[in-house]
Each structure stands twice: as structure tokens, then as C-alpha cells.
Image (tube, rainbow, N blue to C red; front, side, top):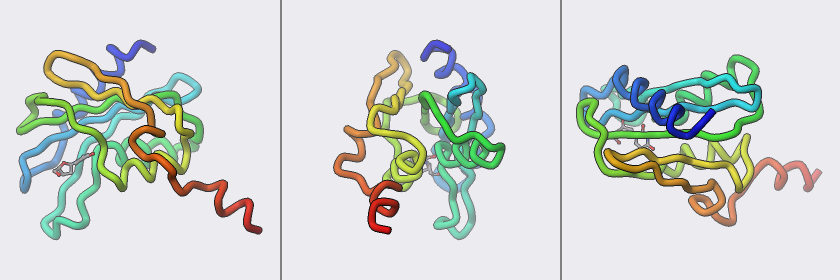
Length: 137
Ligand code: THU
């Protein structure tokens, strides 16, 4: 699947965001190793802290369906369903990605006009991951 297709799925997912507090809607499309795609949106909460980001929604949907290997994710966001300038995933989402993906995992950030490519290692350098726990038995 091309990054443009993944970007289009992220834009569609953004339309179902539940963001009555911030008005900032986010969509994500996660490509699994087997070629399937799981989309996600942000789901806000009146207690604010219980909000779930779009990226984690996509990951948790996929993980709960038995997927463990991932090829790439595309994300986009903006006020009230309109894609705005690019942003990169929040720290919590980066750490959730790190659990299942290595430093080369591509993160496509979709803006009005462009798709920028990042990799997880540059957004979360010197990270703490599963191998740290497994090597200290
Ligand atoms: N948000 C995401 O869904 N992903 C991110 O990476 C950054 C922030 C959401 C959370 C909240 O609903 C809104 O954007 C404003 O922070």
C-alpha cells in the first residue's frame, strides 16, 4: 500500500473523531505486516485525562485483533475535521508504538499539501523498550 492511500484512510478516520472539548480532530491509519489496515480517531472524555489519541486507538484495535507486526502509520489532524499543518505524535503514543515497532518504523504525517516521513527512532531516541526488560532476567 502506498503512503498516499494510507493518508487518505487517516483523513477518513479523522471524520469520526470524538473531540467536543478541544475541537482538534485526529485520524490514524495503521498498516499491518499482513497488509490489513486499522484506523483510529481521538476519543476525548469529560475528565480530559481519559482521552485516547487516534494513534493509540488504531494500535489498540489492531493489537486486540491479534496483530503484532506493523509496517507504517499515517496520521493527520486539525480543527473540526479540516486537515491543518503537520504535527507529530504525542509522547505516550510514541512509547506505545515502541512496544511493537523498531526505530525504522515509518510515521507519515499528513498536512494540507504534503506527506512528511519520520521514523520512530528520530521521534523517540534512546528509547526504553521491551528488550530492556527481557535482557535483565
Ligand atoms: N491527539 C491525538 O489524537 N494524537 C496526538 O498525537 C496528539 C493529540 C488528540 C488528543 C486530543 O483529543 C486532541 O488531539 C488535542 O490534544
